Each structure stands twice: as C-alpha cells, then as structure tokens.
Length: 266
Image (cartoon, rainbow, N blue to C red):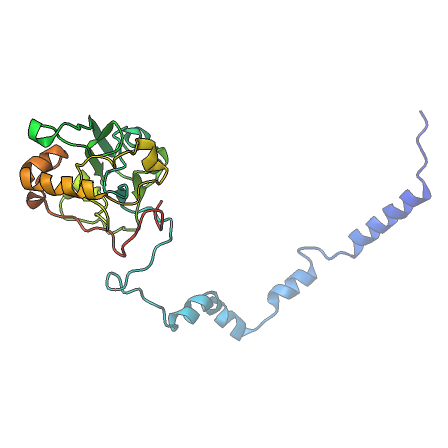
C-alpha cells in the first residue's frame, strides 16, 4: 500500500513545531543556571527572613481581644443553643408527649414520658390539663452530656413545642446538673399566661390553638388557677407535672435577652 504524501499545510506546521523546539531554552540550560546564580550575599542572607515576613508583620499589630464572659459575643439568629419547651398564649404547654423528638435524636439524649390530660376536678383527685391535646409530656429530660445540638429534634416536633434558644453557656461542675428536667426547659410565663393545669379556653378545640385563635388566658382560666392554688398544696402540683418541688431543685439559668418564640430561635 502506497504511503500518502503530506500536504503543504502539514509540512508548514511540522517546520514551525521543529523551530519552536529548537529555539526554546532547556530547563537545565545556561539560562536556568544564570537565574539561579542571580543575586548576591545580601539576598542569600535575607532569604530566610522573607519567609517569616507575614509573621513579623502581624507580630506588632494590635489584635482585638474578646473580653468573654464580661462581654458576650452575639450569636447568629438561628444559632443552635439550649432547648426550650414553649407554651400557648394562655399558658398551656405545646408538648403533647408524642416522643417524636426522642426517636429523632441520634445521640439518644432525650427522654419523654407522656401522660393523659385529666379534666376531672381537683377535688375528685384529677391531675388537671396541661396541654390542649389528649396527652402531655409528664416527664421531659435532655442530657446535655450527649446532645450534639444537631436540631433534628425540633424538626421532628409536630407542634413546635421544642425549639432552640441562643443560650450556649451550659458548663457546670457536676455531670448530673447537665441533665435538664422539664421545669428547667419550660418557657417562663409571659403576660396573659396562667400556669397549668387549667382547662382550655371555653368553646375552643385543639386545632383552634394551633390556628392562633387563642390570644391569652380568659378570666375563667385565671379564676380556676387561683382556686387551684388555694386548694392544692405546692407538692401535689409538682408531683402532677412529673417534676420535683422547685424549692428542692437548683434553678438553671434561663435565656438572656428575653427571647420570644418565633424570633431568634430555631
């Protein structure tokens, strides 16, 4: 088979490539040696110092120091800090004891025990109503020795009862003090709220609470709470919510800055 004859264009490209290879300096040729030998005694003396130029430059600059804990650095709006159990506007708890947060926790840091709400009068041995649903969280614990602050628990909560605040100072001297109980996680009572147990707003159903139709506690709820406080001792009330007597428990610090639900929490 006869070989094909190169075209004039192919011959021209081959000549150009051959000329470029001939004219290009070798990596280890005289030009490279001259470049390496360029410079004198002073350049060789200052070469190691030039490597620390950035370090020497910043050594004499004034660096700002955060005076923590006297001056606390503000956190981001969606910072994952300590948890909080939220309330409805009349004071009833949003937690319904479904335990979905405990199932979603990858670190097994949450313990929830639900119980049924009891509308039986206190005089007849009823424990009262703590949430608008059928059940409420009788026991709620978060072990901050295990918690990784991933936020999966608040994503799993169907009633947005559990959110995360901007509070992050959780260090303590004893391990048992880092297991937070329900009374430590509950949001403080705001204006217009009544401490449960007490009945729901008259004429309202559970769905009405989540639709925002309840603005604050009614006079009937306030009167019920006053009568209950006068009739029931403090110890009986604390046992009904599944916690210890607040007088026997060391109070943990709450959020600073007066955070409100739906604000800087997620």
